[in-house]
Amino acid sequence: MKQNSGSVVLGVTGGIGSGKSTVSRILEEFGAVVIDADKISRDVVMPGEKALEELSEVFGRDILDARGQLERKKLANIVFNDNEKLQKLNGILHKYVAERINDNVKEQQIKRTKIIVIDAPIPIKNGFLDLCHRVWTITANRELRIRRIMERSGMSRDEAVSRINSQLDEQEYIKIADTVIYNNYDYSHLKEDVKSQLTGLLG
Image 1 (cartoon, rainbow, N blue to C red):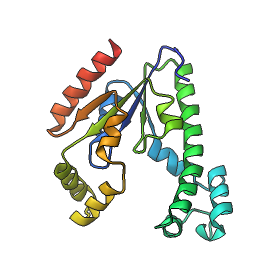
Image 2 (image 1 turned 180 degrees about the vertical axis):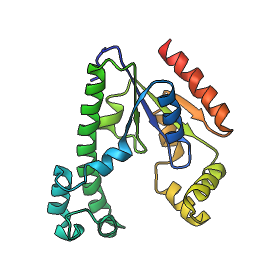
Image 3 (image 1 turned 90 degrees about the horizontal axis):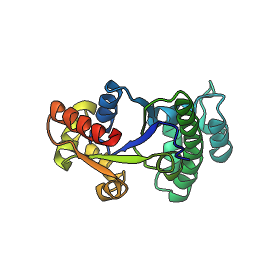
């Protein structure tokens, strides 16, 4: 895609505790429109959505509660430690999430939105990498990430480490980046860094 519509499509990614969402909020303050892939992934499995129907066909109606809503724990238990089923789940979700992100980007391009940000914890090829002019990876010292997760979520250290380990390795995130932002300091430092990078991006 990547048409020259006058819009810059910026992908923002990074592991849990890195500050990815904080960077997206800062970009929003600077006038960007943020497309939140996490929110979209929740929206596409609401009752009446095609993704939920396909999931229930593949994994059985037992993943739905009495109101027809997805029971996430039941689905998680089905795919837990079963890589083949996990791949099936991700394939279905990513397809619908990518479609929705693509539609949202097109809508903002029609509006000639100057900066369109796709905030995605999983840098999927379709619906992220294929749409972005530039990719920013947000990262931070591992111990700092662990502390942030514990403080905001009330998780134990082991739970926080497990969440980090369940995601892509930091080097995998860095490998796809055009720009790496190291979020090891305070908020004001991060905001200045984002402002500087954005100024350079817009030229």
